Each structure stands twice: as structure tokens, then as C-alpha cells.
Image 1 (cartoon, rainbow, N blue to C red):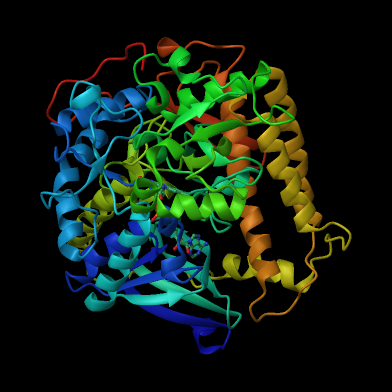
Image 2 (image 1 turned 90 degrees about the vertical axis):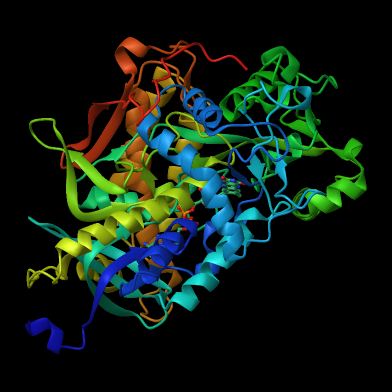
Length: 599
Ligand SMILES: Cc1cc2nc3c(=O)[nH]c(=O)nc-3n(C[C@H](O)[C@H](O)[C@H](O)COP(=O)(O)OP(=O)(O)OC[C@H]3O[C@@H](n4cnc5c(N)ncnc54)[C@H](O)[C@@H]3O)c2cc1C
């Protein structure tokens, strides 16, 4: 092909290309590399800087080391936690696989904390059944102190180096190469050298993580810009359930970094401005360990009704000093450091000021439980998009439904990373050769970058991307927060559409090709904007309250109308919404029918 002889685009052939080197991408890569596949991992940052490294509290599995437990209870808790929007076949698959996956990680080298009898340490987390254990609380979350994600990510990276996975670090995926036969590869930009690379593959896997950066206050790293969802939207496919965004109850007030739920699991609790342990009123049984949506709403109500803490009554306090310095330094050393650094608080002596903070993207690229990307055709039948897969926080399988339980995401990335690897191996058995490429397939990826670097005619030097990003984050924070209603959201959607339109006239100052971080920010902003629009429009349309989507004007869950997943795509006329049914039938056990959620 002519363009390959130019120095414009470097061409690579792999069996599989995985975009993303977090826990999901690396677990999947390991499955493939160990089966002698030629697998490439493309990541916009060095693999060990992926957001998985920041995960603190742990990973759920019904090992029953501390309390008695069973995967079926784990499944029940997850379905209930999802407010009955989770797909029960995928949830059963994940919860059944969990104990085996934790043991496998341990054998691969993850240094889990230990109990005195040598078994893996487990702590209680929010939303776990109370039928077991002392004090009526299951302890299901396996932890490596409060640095569980760090331990998992580094172990996965080392295992991949051993297995011979090919890494392309600091490469930014720009565009999926789609044709009538599905996905043929991906175009990427080498950030350090400023060159284009075409990755041709028999399967492409999106493992690009969450999109927390659509909000102003978030626990998410700067790189969590929802790039996989945006690539799918650009390919004309929908994203699922983006209106369900988890607010973690305990981000450090004013700045955002996360104080893990493990603090409450170890016995910490929340206090309002009157010194009251207010969660006892909202969740009499589970109290501070109710699920995250419940606790975040309770905090919002306390502050709104004037019972916040501090001179402005604008936050809540998380007390843990009564646990003692020894336990804090053994089980929560990272929290001690974060509180000191970001809030100037020594948590062995004083409580930490906290506020609900955008944390986790329940929605994402629609997949089945094998990681295959699915879409509905004209006849509404769900189909698999050939050679395209998605896993981890970028995907919507949907195991979290309307609200994720803490500790289920590290589990999801490992379980579905592995399952997707197995599914791709089957696919490769049928697809031996790389199909012929459309000779123009590289052009739209290149055009996406060149538009910024060459200064397209419509660009105006006075319209800066930083201003547009601030505006988008502000709109999402103010119009699509913990509590929502028609008027506020409608205004938000309108502002957001206007802000999105202004992106076409925005420009960047740095026109260089080598390590142009302003260019990367511009590309990320394009990605964020698509997902923010999908989230805001989906939220406005959903006239009920379910999980993380809480509306003042529709306070009840409406199973008759809304027991369905939202599918949002973006066309010339803006955001288009569609819906598909929830998969309520598990693989082998009886379905859990919707009930009122009480904690
Ligand atoms: C502070 C914090 C604490 C958490 N604690 C817990 C916990 O205790 N337990 C739990 O279960 N969950 C926790 N979570 C959630 C969990 O950590 C994440 O959902 C999970 O790690 C996501 O893994 P991932 O592999 O899907 O994505 P990530 O780890 O986010 O990795 C995404 C990868 O995609 C790459 N990428 C993205 N876009 C592009 C692009 N355009 N081109 C190339 N590469 C790209 C990035 O470079 C990165 O390698 C926490 C999350 C946060 C933010």
C-alpha cells in the first residue's frame, strides 16, 4: 500500500492489540501472551502509572477467611447494590470466579496482607451481606494493606514482561479502523516522537479505564478521560448507562483524593457538624457501611440542611483516630499519608474533612460477559461487533448496574481481563490471517491530530481548550451531581451542547510534534466531551431514581418504565438515546427479582 512507503505512518502487525495497560489490559495480555499470541499493549502512560495503581481498599471474593461466606451471597449483594440494573448472568460469572482469581493472583505474586493463621486478610466493605460474621457483617474484601491496586498492577506488569508481551508506552490511540467486517486495528500517535503508528490486528481490545475527569471534583487520575468510550462513539456505536456515575462518599474535601471505604470497614465513621453519627438515621443496620450511593446522598442532605462541618458547614468529618495509631499505620498507611499531604490532618489524632467526589464510571462500552462489544441492529437484535472487545472500567458488562459495590472493580478487571483473553483465543482460531485493509483507513486518525497542529481555518487563537475543559467540568459538577432534577439538568444539557460546539473553534498554542502535552490534552478533551454529553442527556431522560442516579423530582425507582439500559450515540443531530433490556436471567441459579433496597 502506497502510504506505507512514506515515512508518515509506521505499520505494525500483531495478533491482538490492547489499548490500555491498567489491571484489565494487563490481565488480558497475560492470558494471550502465555498462549503464544503476538500481543501488543498500547498505553498513553507508562503501564505502572495506570489508574489501577491508585486502588486502595481491596478486591472482593467470597473466600470466607474471616466470616463465613459464599459466592451466591456475593452475587446477591452485587445485584442488590446495582439497584437491579446489573446483568445477572455477568454478575454470577464474576462472583463465582472471584475466589479462584484471588488465589491465582496470590500465586502470581500479589503480596496480600495476612491473617495470623496465614490465610489472606479480608475486611468488611460497603453493601456486604450482614447475615454472616461477628457483629453481622461479612468480610469479603481481600487487601494488600491500603495499596491493593499497586500490588496487583506491578505483579501483572512483571508477569507480562516474563511472558513477552510487546509494550508501546506513551502512545495515544486516536482512531479505530472499522470496516464492514468489524475492527481491523487502531491508529496511534507516539507522544514522545510525534509520529503516527498503524497497528493492524485480528482483535482490538479497549481497556482504557474510566472517565472521572468529566467532573470538577474527582478521585480519578488526570489520564481517566474515557478514551475507549469516545473511540466507540466516533465509530458510530453507542455507549451504555453513562448517566450512572458513582460519587464516593469520602473524597478529601476541596481537593478530591480518595479516602478508601476501608477506613469505615476498619471501624471509622462519619460525623456531622453537631457531632452526630448521622448514618444511623439513614441506614439503621449497615450504618456507615451502607452502599456508596446511600452514604453520598445522606452526606448531601446533611450539608443541605445546615448540619455540615467547618465555618462554612460545607463538609463532613471522617473519624478514625479511635482505631489507634498502630492499626492505622499497619492497615491504612497510605490514608495517613494522603490526609497529611492533602488536608494537613494527622488522622491518628484528628478526623479527616470529606465530601462526595466523582469516582467510578458504571457505564461504558456495551459488552457481553465475554468482553465482546455488542450493539443493536435495525431489528433490535443484539449483535457482536466482529473483532472488537472492551474490558475493565471502560466497558459496561454490566456487573455494576446503577451502583458499584466497593471492591468489585479490581475483581471485574481481573475476571473479565482473563475471560476476554480466552474468548479472543477462540476467535483467533477462526481468524488466521490479517484481512486486507482499506487503503484510506489511516486518514481520519491523522486528520484528528493535524487539525490541531496545523491550525484549521475555523480555529480562533483566543478560544483555549483549558477554558472549555473548565466549563465542561463545572457544568457536570453543578448540573449532574449527587442530586439531580429536570430544570437543573435541562439547563446543563443546553450549556454542555453549546460548550461542545465551541470545541471546533478552539486552538492550542504549542504546534510542536515532540512531547506536545497540550495536544494530548486537546485530544482528551474531545473524548471527555462526547462522554459528558452522553451522560447528561441520558440522565435528563431517565425519569426515576435508581442507584447513583438520584432525582428530587422522581424520588422512586420505576421498574415498569426504566428497568432497561440506556444506549447513547452521537450523530449529526446530537445525542441519540436508545434502550435495551436488563439481562435478569443468571447462568445457573434463580434470578433475584427487584425488591426495595434497605441497608
Ligand atoms: C483512587 C481510586 C481508588 C480505587 N480503589 C478501588 C478499590 O479499592 N477496589 C476496587 O475494586 N476498585 C477501586 N477503584 C476502581 C478501580 O481501581 C478501577 O476501576 C480499575 O483499576 C480500572 O482498571 P482498568 O484496567 O479498567 O483501567 P486503568 O487502570 O484506568 O487503565 C487505563 C489504561 O488505559 C490507557 N489509555 C487510556 N486511554 C488511552 C489512549 N487514548 N491511548 C492509549 N492508552 C490509553 C492508560 O494509559 C492506562 O494504561 C479505585 C479507583 C480510584 C480512582
